[in-house]
Image (tube, rainbow, N blue to C red):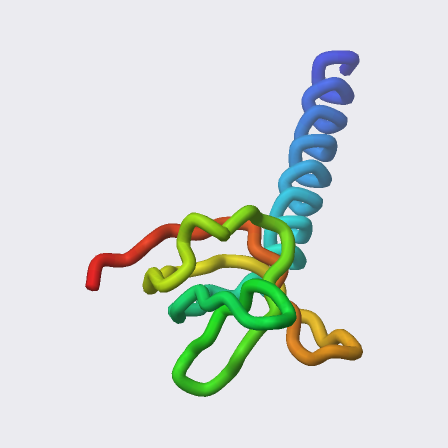
Length: 95
């Protein structure tokens, strides 16, 4: 009887932890965006310019990538000065 209760409790614990992990990954992943563009220096600072938008950048030191085409991963928020791309990952692209 003790063995059965332990097994049931362990199974329940694993189920709850698994559900929590899936929920956490789903919540953080849906807000992340991947955007391709060029890093440019402006009078207001560094921006990520795409074919359709311009984003003020935050969260990463990207000064060495000015003039380069990049793929960035992060979250886009609206600020008083426009769209802000909070960068969590970046990689330079060829070409």
